[in-house]
Length: 127
Figure 1 (cartoon, rainbow, N blue to C red):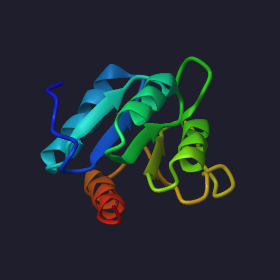
Figure 2: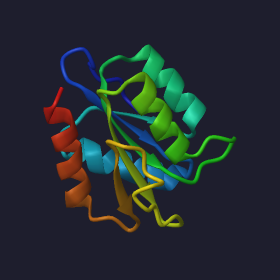
Figure 3: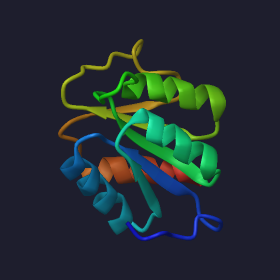
């Protein structure tokens, strides 16, 4: 993916282990005019968050490999970077309010792209 200038505009980080779904989410968000970065798992996402302070929204799937799922990732993000808006999605998990960390938003798959983009816009407007 081409590098974008993250110094002037907050970026969106897409975290999804399935490559095709990750690319589709990146395309959806880029098409709406937002700079995007992506990661295949929670560890890669945390490294990007540490290295790029300009990330304003994280859009993550719940079900991911290598130990840390999207709900745990969201909780870690809200603990370390409370100003980052986190959007969680899943096609397998029915996330009840208790499972979704406070301050996060959940969309079941298949999600309506316009609603996700509106939520990204809302999350970035607070930065």
